[in-house]
Length: 357
Length: 229
Image (cartoon, rainbow over all chains, first blue to last red; front, side, top):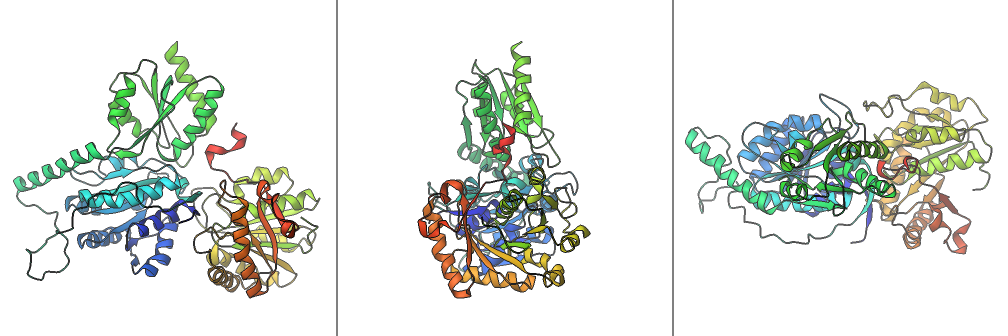
């Protein structure tokens, strides 16, 4: 298929359709409204179903139902709406159901604002809802990557029976880039959905979708089983990009939109004779811990710096991964302010000056 | 661009067709011809990537910009300031309306209907056939009709703005031209301009060159804003 020019939000919606998603339940919120709007137009054309729910809470529970019936299903929202969906996400993770949830993050806390932010990192990667569980969190930095990750996200969700979150931000949702919809490069062997509640006809035991375990021993076993799955995911699914790290003095950790800004900072720094590397986690959970560990052992790397559109969230995972081997600094803007390349460069110079002195 | 007749220009089209870049470029060209220009950012659809973000650029060109209340803040309330009515009073200024995408965006024009009826206007419908839901003449016509119905105004001109941003080549533009020509023929609406970045427009074949409308790109994501360097 030839290339088309798409907004991030539209491209994510189309990618879901191409991945076989036929059900979408959502509730509008800026800056992701193009996703439900596109789904409302396109899903009926492909025999799917779009419902604008009466609230985020009902939308996520509709997702729970459709996922339980074995369908490929998606919902999307932005920060405050994703907060409302946390109870449902915990139930979906507890009931081991596959689905894809998109969060086009905006400034918070509270109702916050509509401009881009990355301040939902903790919520996305550390649980968000109650109980012992994880979402697989994918953080694209271009619209093409968003398309590819949405398509693969449905496969990851099905393979592990776990919800997958696409964590973008308002910038990625609103900007336009040429994209193409291409089949995934790696084909996965997906297990048949023998557990789905497709209607009891007597030829198999009844399938029950449930996240309630009254016997604590049984619940502990259930959670341990889920955690074995998480170990598999950690082993198989980590994605990370290392950029210009080989000769770098300092490595910046950034994801999504911010990583693109950092790439332009790296070019500027080069012109001034400063070598800056970038580690860009593409999966935020599982976090690319070993990549940071490896680079932290290199002698030429003097320091790490996390740059985020938040007050400092991913930086905690960077610190845990670097594990004291090198100092870890932080620079961030929040509330919908996007860090400017010159400001990041100034911050890098400050760190380098301090570390080398 | 020749001396434009008519005082009021309205840019409509599919969501993401390039209306804003065209409206900015069109306004700057008018201003550089020595005209007094007011740009009305009437986009009630897009939260960002909008003409109000280039206020500094426009003001440097001596262009007055009227934006919705709360633009660029954290409030997405589509509230329009009363100053917009002033553009219908001062009969000397050129006025450029940068309208939000699709029929939904065009709805905002409706409230000014009585004023648009009092003098001639040009309403451009911008087409990028590389955008979703605008690749076939029928889809373009359907949206054009919807825009006319919501705004209660008539499209007077088409603009072929087919592009893939930084990946655009002449073939994309000519391929778009074939489609837009079919729309023009069916609706009997002329194609006013064929627009694109200068590199591409310079290569337009002779028969199209008089319609060529080279544009500069003003809206950038934060990692390639030139003023940052």
